[in-house]
Amino acid sequence: MKPIAILYEHPDWFKPLFAMLEKRGIAYITFNPTQHQFAVDAPKPEFDLFFNRMSPSAYLRDGIQGTFYTLNYLKYLEYRGIKVINGYKAFTYEISKALQLLLLERLGIKYPKTRIANHVSQIEAAIEGLRFPIVIKANIGGSGAGIEKFNSIDEVRQAVKNNQVDFGIDHTALVQEFIPAKGGYITRVETLGGKYLYGIRVYFTGESFNLCPADICQTSTGHELVRNAYALDAPKNGLKVEAFTPSAEVIKNIETIVQQSSIDVGGIEYIIDERDNETYYYDINALSNFVADAVNVIGFNPHEKLADFIEGILEKKSTQEALLLN
Image 1 (cartoon, rainbow, N blue to C red):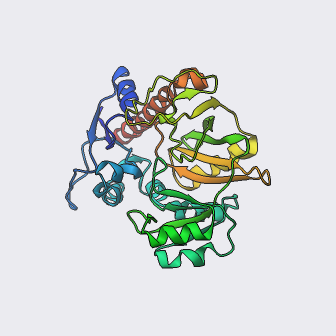
Image 2 (image 1 turned 30 degrees about the horizontal axis):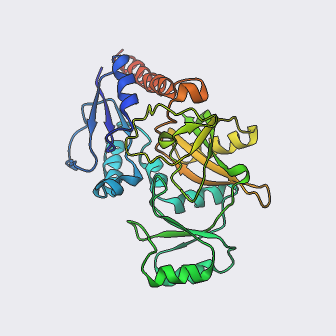
Image 3 (image 1 turned 45 degrees about the vertical axis):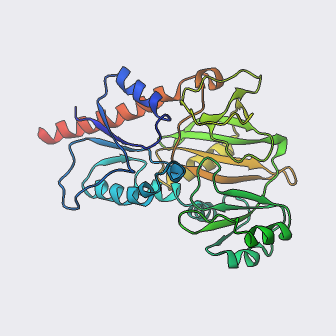
């Protein structure tokens, strides 16, 4: 069997995946998208399957050069006929919150009221018609990076004056109504192969926007999680997590989102507004490193399911190749 190629840059997030592949005897090689090159006229690579694990937050780890480069490499692989998990289309949504919201708008799925801007001179005009508090968030973020909350126009003006507004690496930002979370939690739903895998509620305190499930410190009963995602850089942020199964309507919405965005492995986050009890979807992720200590939290190891998914693709390709040879 030709190996799987896995593109990733975070040193710890994917160790459970590698361990699972090794346990099953599935050969794989890895590439670092922040230090990579390819020839435009190169023939088809010698691997059967490519798994894109590039993170939009790579710029926080000196990996900014990998973000847009990855789009080019994914397009090359697809042109050469390589099967890609979380390919070019999925990654375009991963690195653009604006595109995520445009997809939600097209699908008729509710999201926080938002304006898109590319210069600080446009912020006040963008705020018009929005209710405070608001957040200004970088179009390309990850792990809560590049998000600031403002309670008044004066706070915004002061931040602009002090050059404290971050438009991110593509110089594009979302000016968005802040949604106060009913119950003090958000819900994250993980999907695999375009279908619901599991859901968790993430309870938070303070003003942290880093709700990365691999970084969560404890369960809702106070049990400290074993970080099976090896998130060594995770802050002791006091977040708590519990398993949760959303309604059939929510699951349908989420499956529609990931299918329409061609996300093979991903997580969707939504929040219930304590003011009107409405559900708003606000984050589409094509990078899922799964919740820490998953067996204790959700009752099973999602990396087992992910390995099953990968094996299924390889078996299908093997069968197709055998039929062609015959």
